[in-house]
Length: 426
Ligand code: SDX
Image (cartoon, rainbow, N blue to C red; front, top):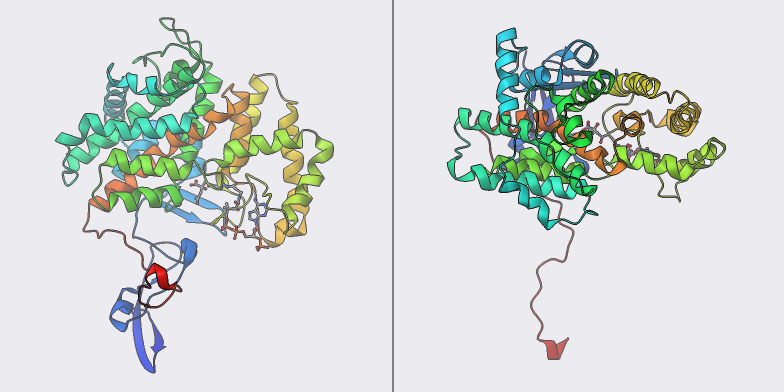
């Protein structure tokens, strides 16, 4: 029997249907409230489902994450990032032929138009990679906007391929710009993650010397970051996309949202905190600061809007972190030791236990990136690289069915109507 809820508004009983989920929580469909002259109120959308989706499912209490039904642990272990991109976009795992053709299509789109490379001339070497990457992705619209019909599924797929293909090349260019080095062209013979690392750390004209441990770890890290249902940056891409804005512009809006330290910028902030703590003897002092309500300090890399259990990605990331540090001969990396002590202490503290604050994906990613030789200010750019297929899959899902422009309402508490007063009478 179809579920419903009843609420009484000014003495009138209003029935609202309950829509059933395939997994997780059902939702109360409140669209009928408009006719009853009342809104729902949910700042920060803690208990609001903004859309239907079939892409990613998270069970925050159980610490479960699946992409198109496949558990993140299995994908991280068995799959590859480009296969996960295909899965997120198409909804099914590819056959060998489909994957091979997809990989070639992405590789063919990785090079950046020579004229477009001049976008980086406008930045100084001090520019933050995220500011350059946000501008460059928005700038891609200048190459494709005129021929793009977002109502055409084939055009949307082409935008997806361009974004997945060009983001590693542009991200590597932001790094090369920041060290005043020449850009390195993508190498069609290299895998996606190895190509990115070579474009960052390679030598122009020389074959790649990227180790398979590092490229495998980076590929796995991209898988872990690939999607996460309606997080702040994905919701930003959906909202921007709901105005029928250009997909490159909508994704650039998502990059801007991701940059915040409460979201994707946390991986960079974790390193800043660990460097500020400086020594294992000061870890407790900072855990106490995080607990102090009068201190705005938050323990970056801890807590999550949805996960009230271990972030399943953090567990996989921790394993990658150890593998990379071991390969780099840095098993006793002081930052990792400090991080592990921080995690141990925090998880024994009532404050963290009561609030179900666990390490999230950003807690170990920063240490892993640092061990891979990635500069701290590039960490969030790597998150962009990983999250690109998720953003574009949600954008495509929204445009593949009837949708409305996103336009929330408000609870108005400002001055009620009053007449203008001439300046000589105020
Ligand atoms: C990502 O949404 C996603 O899916 C995001 C993401 C993705 O893949 O897209 O998973 C990626 O953004 C991970 C989160 C990265 N951010 C951080 O690590 C920054 C540190 N974490 C906090 O800023 C916070 O935990 C948030 C922003 C992640 C979640 O904030 P919420 O859900 O709004 O929770 P809240 O701020 O209401 O916290 C509840 C309580 C509060 O205390 P009380 O008022 O109840 O006494 O927990 C406290 C908070 O003060 N708290 C923390 C804390 N996080 C929450 N206290 C100290 N340190 C922290 N990190």
